[in-house]
Length: 358
Ligand SMILES: NC(=O)c1ccc[n+]([C@@H]2O[C@H](COP(=O)([O-])OP(=O)(O)OC[C@H]3O[C@@H](n4cnc5c(N)ncnc54)[C@H](O)[C@@H]3O)[C@@H](O)[C@H]2O)c1
Image (tube, rainbow, N blue to C red):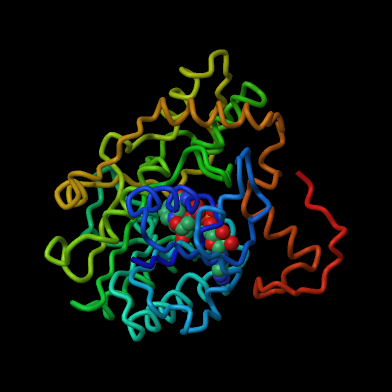
């Protein structure tokens, strides 16, 4: 089997590569990424890309169709991956997340790729009352990022058939330690605050609901989606990925962190405007279709791994919300220094002496 993983040089990618390498040792793994965050490594023993057979530094907006020859499956992770980046680079977010994804899927279908797995997001449910959303619930995307996922899913559905199986995994918010860590994710932020300054600062009033999933469990879901039979879910499937136990209110995540890391002060912003991005999610369909691939890592283990990972990095930056582990900060910096143009393409004419501040 030849598997192309786009966006493999981000936060989730290294876990996905390790999962697929272990499940399909004889397969050929090909990575493709433009490398925005290539330098944002943690404490990795080796460059994570050494685990793939081939690595392309390429933009998904301009993938040559020949690159897809002989590919059996595509795991499509590449994209602008959160709301702050989507708000700042709105047009580019639609270009990369929506248009380029659909172009890639078209080329893939023409070249005989049989399985296409898309990294979608539960954020497409937007604001919802307390009843958990299932796959038939109305979508309410509140941001450019969430809208880009909705449009892509819609257009992918129209392309799927027996020869081209599409699985759109509506992931919960990711968390956990990675060789390319992100600290702009709620649990990772709380653990880092606790480790660096014994403080957890909740920017909302703490009540919003947020389903979470460990990146290792995301990788296992991707493994399942790639090889699932069309009889199990149909030629197009959009499914929520996570678990009922991991529907948390943000304040409960903070309390869980303070169980693992004692003497932490939790500050809740009681005057915060209500955070509209609050939703609970129903995972019955995923449980029914993928009983052997259900999330396994628990919250306390995830918090411990993050804490130990940060300690191993000797990470002590109290000002981590300005560090290179924040995706928007990195893109903004690369733009300001002239490394990226306004379409977030590499300019190739930079002063390479300029260093990104940690
Ligand atoms: N992290 C989460 O909570 C979460 C939840 C749901 C869905 N997802 C989705 O999963 C995917 C991966 O998320 P992540 O957390 O690893 O994000 P990330 O930002 O760490 O990684 C995304 C990768 O895509 C690459 N990329 C971006 N634009 C590209 C382009 N034009 N051409 C080639 N490569 C490009 C980046 O360089 C980066 O390595 C994203 O599509 C994201 O929307 C993430």
